Image (cartoon, rainbow over all chains, first blue to last red; front, side):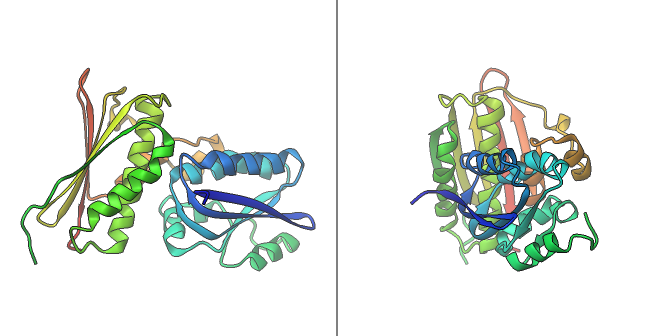
Length: 121
Length: 144
């Protein structure tokens, strides 16, 4: 079994990246490649679904830091959803909830894209 | 509860990121000696992963031919894990604690690991041994 998987589902304008397994310094380049490819294609309304992600280290968080500015610059965003508590705790420790939209469910992130006027970060 | 010092676990591995999964499994196995709360096991696993990732990236500059020696032991209620490398040392006092808003603006992606290690551990000690080895010591109180 692969240590880390990232697959993309397109829902109209929005792309959902399903991340699973272990996201560390070894596997982070895989996710970076997926986000970079989406941005290259102008697909910048991104939701990353963490439901199947068991583990994240700072290298995984670094992927979001590395991509967020160019994606927001292209009028898109990366919204993060469905984190397990141990994964959310790491985002929280580093202050990510101040910088990123983090939701319990994919539907909430999609609703935010469809109704973006409320308290934009 | 047995408070005596316990077995010291050691692993030696090369400085390739593909070994991080093996390193995490080593830390989990080392925890089995004691009744360590799962949250603390996860914190130690992450701290050691971050430390090993930093060694690979900074001390050995992604050369997979370097050596990392990891040792884990319990002393009373303290869980102590050390990581040794023979790569390039650093002064941890020169690694500033990142302000996340500034990070976002500057698009900086490194430096989060040591910041996280300091948040997760009770004590962090680093010795740069010149031309011999560098040693990072991570200590976590398991008594809760």
